[in-house]
Length: 298
Image (cartoon, rainbow, N blue to C red; front, top):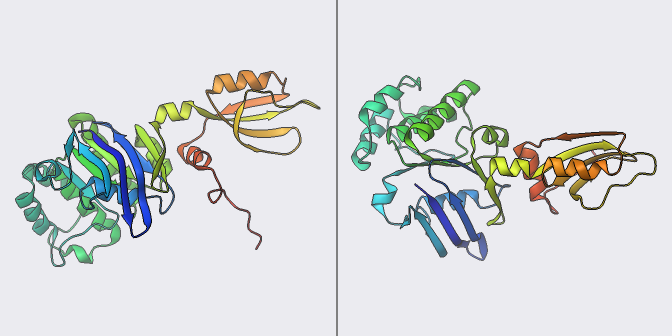
């Protein structure tokens, strides 16, 4: 199921939480939506799930509008950062509710998933820890066998073993059932391991949307020592430079091979090209005043 947002705007009073946001989540892929706090990620997710109605623009799933469309929404599941359950409900009680609402709920799969989530099915969910509530939410959501699973800070509160368990189940659904996963998280190191495509959002606008592999190929880090009196050659698109004197660390836009060829024209004493991880790419791509790491004298 392909999720598309076209020129979506959502205002709260005078503030535009989303400002003509356009993004496309491919079918059968894991899409990472990343951005700083207040960028509009959660608002975008709530609009995708039909919880909020955008003031302008279109949101669709396989070409069908999502808002107030039960047939489409029955094929989608959402795990928010703060997963909700009825005040007195236990897991079995929520299971019965989900089964009554979602036609695709698979009771057999629900029972099989019990082996992955060691929880007391008869205990009130409200008494669970944050991590246990997340486990219960995944247990129920995965039993729906959704075509689209939307996640907001999905593994926050889970221990490392359970994080691996959850991602294993999610990626298995993507591989075997062609599920589409839209995930927003601040844990970029974890997203780097699972995402096929990423979108960088800030101020409610999409800054950059690319396949992760393409994004990593189009930016690199070059460390080099210039010869005495040497200068960097023309043609390098340097988006960040650090270092003093002849020692330079450059963040360069463009393929690594091309960047090294240009740098070689300066006859450096030493040169090394290094890949950037998603967190570094996010920092340098976001750029701009207000997003740099600041030196604070204490």
